[in-house]
Length: 183
Image (cartoon, rainbow, N blue to C red; front, side):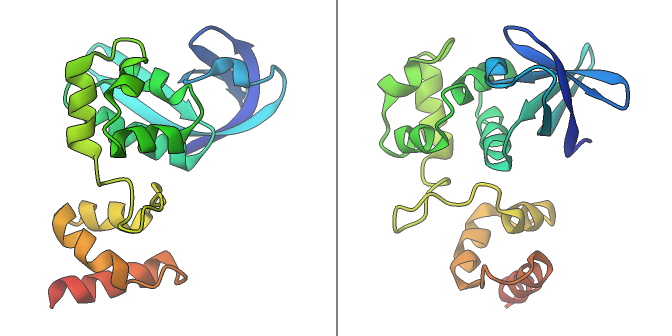
């Protein structure tokens, strides 16, 4: 699994770029390939899709964009090729706002997103991207990912999150969360 790649854009096409790193060109699908410039260096956060008949890389300029993509592809009926155009707007907060306000018309404006998939996105993600005081949650919350990887349920994780000091190192946040979860 790749986390990120740093390299120079050598080719730009309608739905992907070719990023060269150590004289190897990586074909990376991106939400908006034309936001890149040829012969300029970028750091892209990657998601690697492995299927029996496909091996693909998806690239994102920010961790937040990548993490929203990961949440979107976990929605029933929404795959990588449908989630990528949603991110092409470049407005993570706009997408999250549409989900929280149950704005089906906003979500249906994206290619291949019909009424059924828009409702499923809202059903699966509403309330999971915003805090109680209506601030957008840092989607790249490593703490949530770490606790989920340890097998804790989202409901239990949400209960302890407000009690964790976000200014601590991630290792200390995990230790504190584990103490609270074990009580």
